[in-house]
Image (cartoon, rainbow, N blue to C red):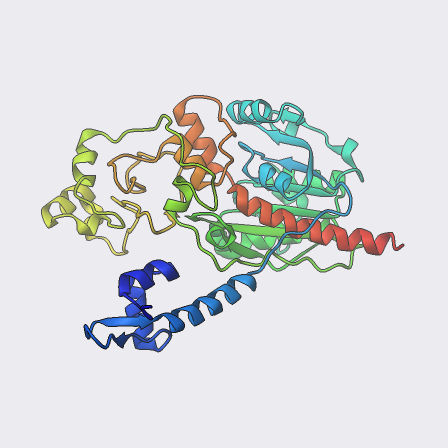
Length: 411
């Protein structure tokens, strides 16, 4: 029986590329040997199996954020969009009692997929949520990032009037949940040199909530095949002395192939659907870009013509004329897939991702259908919190609420 494996066989067995195996050889992780007869570089089966055992041990040690709710926990969601966060929270076992959203197409999407959800369509300013006081465990909301007017050194709730964060805080004050979760773009950290975020924290403090140190969660660490980041702002009601812990990141990173083809994330290949198209002039340029390539892979004269004035500016601009590779996560999806400077081109075909491909990259279930025009559907998906990130966040909320209620109602 042959006791050796070729480079190709070993690569396939351990699920790594040949370049990685060569690097492992240099680093002493898995050493190649010379096969006695052919003198080819090969690997001992026993060495490979030992390594696989270690790899499987690592996989066994992979974290799991899963936790089951000890009772029914309810969520009120603000700025709900097309339901990315809501579906994720639902998957974690939380019950959505009401969702507010101003965009009519997103509201139609929510109703179409979850007829039993209480969708409150309209401007948040027009709703009174006090009937939910002490009846809701969690208030969540992806409020847009807006500047505040500063009346003094410390920003108060009244100073934030006219902003959507003010409305988020108003609802939290009216409802008095055990925990509130705000989510936003990473840019909030540096917005107005950090003053906007500090203002939000001081407002939550004023209305009776301690803010957990803010974290930016990377979606790729939470079973999402996309390099998307979301800033999470967690407030705990001041009478509760329970520590909240963010979901632990997973080791496994999923890529575009995992998103669009049958595998661990989805049971089938992505279904055919409508999608945007590039104008012919852009298609002619992107035809020249290889998978994982971008504008610098174009001939110099085409680079200059395509990039215009930004060719001479600093910065890598790696998202421009970008074709995603199968073996990497997608870059952050935008609301308009054909717009210039944020191309995310399909690996094999010179086109943007379709609506259903977009939804897969955001980890929406295949049965989740979007309402409105193609442009409206892209906007809803592009604005969403990835569903799997929402689910992992949900588990962290469930764990917190389990701890809270077990201490509040000891047996």
